[in-house]
Image (cartoon, each protein chain N blue to C red):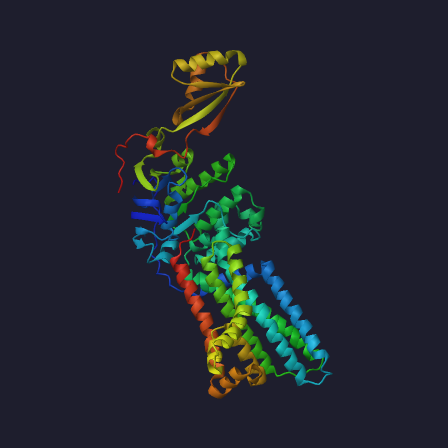
Length: 304
Length: 295
């Protein structure tokens, strides 16, 4: 459905995307993962025809450059933040974009209903929360029932509760069979939504792999803060050290760095050592946005 | 790449979209009119133009003693000078901030990610801003006409309408120049700065440059006339005078030359020059916008 062949994009002497080739099959979902400046958003903008580039990009067999309008009719675009005037009502924004996409009437209300905003149709964009704006962006992207969704940093402006419900909405779209291309630097988003992950570094495609393998491939780590009885902190540090976990005392808590997919292990180890844990916090991916160079060579990941 | 368990979304083969759709242009124009009505600067200029037109009409008709045509002539002359100052400023700045402002807010990238072409976007902006500009000019002249009517002045309706038309065409030319600036500017403040500089160049430097050139290079009337055709403001001034007074004698030897050399073709000559000042910048803006990446 989406074919990217030898795409290069330069900004002066800086190469933002360097000879990237990818293919996303119809109904599949691909995440573009990489640190800031890796070229994720630039590549998305090339797909949308917003940036000039060397190479070739086709959507459903149509060239982005020569048939840009037709290509963009097949794409629903969800930007990082919906960029429309704040004094527009949601229904006005949806109606305007619907007309641009050559669909109108009941589809506008339906789009708002799909994302749970039909009760807020008369609300102005400026009055909406970050979560509502992001839902609005998705509603606009769904107008015209496009087979492809292109999304930039899906939940970067959302709190954790809004992230969860937004990801659910996106999962529904994936189940509906849409082809999805998105950028993210959040591991849980990639795991929840992607079939494959393209790891970008300095504009180059380093490898393609399954999202489940990504954490190990990249050596992604998380930091877990554990709140313990003060008199058991030394015991806890010692118990974790015997299993190879390095823990740092931090006031009434300890901070333990773990592999991303083993965050529960320190809790289990402390339970086995009969050390009570009053509370815990996840401090985010220790190196999310990951440097793909930390990973091992992939096995069985095809780069087209 | 393997799909999830979902059935792939069926792609319906749609007819190719036309490169230029009038419906899309009008839709974007409507958005632009809405944006212009929210633009404080545009509203301020429109208000200033209307109030000044009103004041000039009152002043021009105050001394006529309800005598008629001379009141209209004086009002028209005042309005021509007012148009020469305000309309280019209003059009240049409105054009210069329109695309640059969208780029700055991020709305340009969002709009261009929709199934529209860059030419449609440019034309939509031009049509929308031209409509807003035309309405502001019509309002100013309308108020002026109302004052003259209330004071019992008789006016040449045809000349009055020609003046409105010429002012609008001048506005469109300056709007097109403003859009060129806007396609090149990254930020609306930069676009605004360039627009004001251009306005100064057209209004003041153009006049002074012409006068200076005439003296330094000992230009003949014909050369002076042809040189003045390069400045749209001069073209407007000459065509307005010709339209209201039916003569260019007021302009001196260059005007006399024009009346003798092009006795019948002057309206066409002026019209062509102004249309060229609309078409050429618009074409340039279209090329720049098409070639420029959208950040």
